[in-house]
Amino acid sequence: MKDEYLKAISFLKNRYEKVWETVDWLGYPIVAFWTCGREDPPIVITAGAIGGTQATVYAAFELILSLNYEKKIVVIPARDPVGFHNLNNILFRMFKKKIDVITRLVDLIEEEGGKILINQENFFLGIVRNIGFAFHKDYSRRYPRRFATLLKETLVKNNLIEELDGTRILFPFSKSMNAEEAKIFTFYVNKGGVTDYDYFSGQDEIIPEVYSLKSFLNQISPSLVIDLQEHEGEHVKIGVNNREENIIASLKLALSQISEDNTEESNIEGENSVNTENRIYLVEEGSNTLIDYMRNKNITGISLSTPLDMSLEKKIETLVTLCKSLINIFALISLI
Image 1: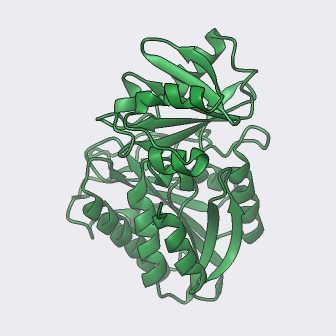
Image 2 (image 1 turned 180 degrees about the horizontal axis):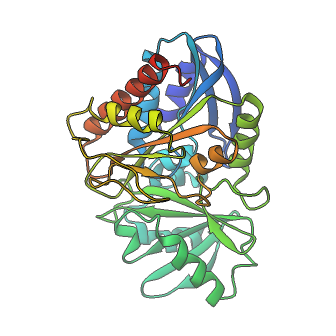
């Protein structure tokens, strides 16, 4: 099968200098590209942190090809490359097989000599080649990020939390349950908890690739980190770990550059409150995300997020416009 991600990464490696690289559990490269500029400390732009956010990866690719600043900018287009692919891409890479619907995972795991751990009316969990596969009657038809709590409760109830310590559980999801359309959200079971690729707390509790990324960020000490995301909701949102007035003013100005938003009433009040339009919010301290981790390092971190239901083209356009606007504004007022 042709792999769009590998083709793009190969092209970029021939054109841009890579400043850091690791590989995920399936051999996909996770790469940081030096896109432009020489002034340190660099700005770091990351994308593709979790499954189902393909628009952020495409936006990162476009940014790599179009950024041109004196400030050094490093872009990591996909923190979770598996999450960029559909279910059949991953199954073919693992087993040289495909399935038609998500529920056929039950048969595939048995065919490949795997172990069925849970097979209930609403929930299935099996493991093969040390990788878990799960689906849920309801959560597999929608964005499953909130499934982590139920997954942990189910593992505890079935006395599996210790047995699966250190295991990745791939959770495909699609409204139609079609395997060719299904995207993959990766959960990670460790130290009695269930996390994902945007969990940065501790060392032993996090996914190995996340630990490698943390080490890279600690090494280069960026001046600003911008993370491209997608979310369930109706409007573009910006999360920030720094409530300084000039930073908030910059975010308002950046939002004014896109047609989707009217930021006239933008304001931050209280520790974790959102503005009246739910557009700019303070990232919760202790949320353990990349942006929260940057707060602990006294580095400004900003999350730019588009609604999942927005068209792919509009999401890419919005993320690219917002990101460039922020960099321009921050450079103009000497915030970077």
